[in-house]
Amino acid sequence: MSLPARVGVAVLATTALLTSCTSREAAPSAQGTGGPAASAAASQASGPGCARDRIGYPAVDVKNAVIGFSQSEKEANPFRIAETQSIKDEAAKLGIPSDKLLVTNAQSDLNKQISDIKSLLDRGAQLLIVAPLNSDGLQPALDAAKAKQVPVVTIDRKVTSDPCDDYLTFIGSDFVEQGKRAAQAMVAATGGNGKVAILLGSSGNNVTTDRTKGFKDEIAKTPGISVVAEQTGEFDRSKGQSVMEQLILGNPDITAVYAENDEMGIGAVTALKAAGKTPGQDVKVVSIDGTRNAVQLVADGGYDAVIESNPRFGPLAFRTLQDFADGKEVPPTVIISDDEYDRSNAAQKLANAY
Image (cartoon, rainbow, N blue to C red; front, side, top):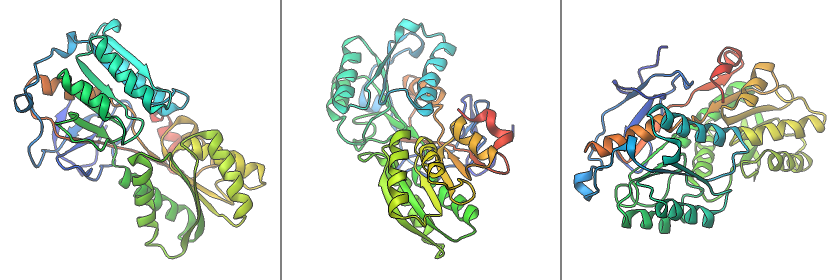
């Protein structure tokens, strides 16, 4: 499977194309194949990373360690299901016994996630992989891990704490780039003219902020498209549907919807149909994630484009922990590559969706 050459050349045995960055800001993500069978590459870091000899943490044999994974949200949407499964699958691939992989779920409760992480530490976790619920608020849990010299790899959402000091590294997408690519897909779908409603993700995390910024900054380059309404749908399908129903009533001339995840986009499709509109025709729909249901809608013509947000963090997370254990420098940010689905390729790429 071929990959574009927008990023570097050092090949790793992981499942996603990535770029390593050394600044707090994410570097632009490459557009890779994104599917489960994708190969991987990494560019050289442009500055110092984090190594054990810098912070004095002990060496831990990853394959024989007790590893804790803190999931942030209930596994009711495909992204979280795929994310957790990727962690479990990679642990199994490495031969880590199931009783040494401790998994918790915060059920979208920040206080519970703090408690979960402290509980994982009390149960003997020597390494932690954390999918933060919010960018802020996890410092008590990170402090607890630091006190026990337990490395923390964060995935999916950035935290505002300091890499190498409070946590080891962040592995995730370039969310600003995702928003930019969604805007470009919207311009293509609308022909450069339209009135767009934005279904925002939940507040308090960088995913929503960055996907909004990337979209608005890019869409502003097309004068024929205007954002006429925006409201949070909390990354939830039913909430996205109810919000879309309200937006249609207040703005019956909406001709396009940008949903900051697929679940809200699918909810919007239901609301549009109930209002007598034809998604993909009367109202163009673009969202972010890459779930099978959304990609199928693109293939069927009821949706216009989906920008993938790759949830398969397992190989990168465990590789990062192993590199750290081996004394290698770990970059503070690792950007995973995201694919893209539109009418021209959705049917052929459906197997890559999750």
